[in-house]
Image (cartoon, rainbow, N blue to C red; front, side, top):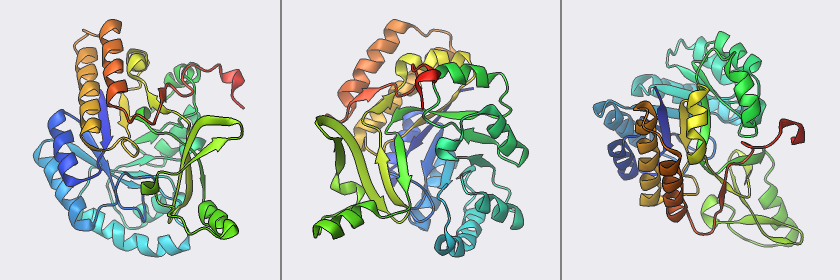
Length: 306
């Protein structure tokens, strides 16, 4: 079965995504979760969990930050809340969080998300033996390596099929340090819409923002794997992530509907390349005008990646 996971930026959007046919909603709060479109209060998280369960769908909570001591002190109380709220899955990247889940006997399944470190079936299977029910594959793994990995994977692996892809995170407040140096008092949050350009390449557009986890920098182009879904499906990659951090509003819901249609076509063996091209063209019109789309590392020769 194909699972479509989609981020949500509000309760209203969560309702629309559930109606659109998304299988799992991805939410959380900024203190513990990385690069979320919105930070939800405890009450809002509970509302979304209940909405999803009423619709026969699931909720995944992001607890995938690197928990430095200040956050680790806050974590036990949040995990106690999650035990009662009863989401279907947690996304975890810090081994300290996994230890605490086991220490507190919290039996919510967890997905291992070690970001750019998750690049081999051996590593994924290691965390499966430690209790992970799935893993998030690094966005930098090309398809040729994914094919080789697929033969050895013991748990489902999530692949980003639409949305922005983070290429660098630093705990350091890089933007604040820059503002201190230049004596500028600029806003550094995601809503500011800041981006970096390479020297003499003004067309480049590396989105950047800062929060309590540090500084986040995103790839020049966002991901659209619509034309590659049949290849992913064929090799067992059937957990698809749609990330709306830079694709807000109703357009993200419409994009999600297209992936739901693609899922139905693959499961009904009615997939066609012509239809995939048409869906991809629709995604292009729905995607933010100031953000380009490509397939990231998917088609790269592994030997070219350093």
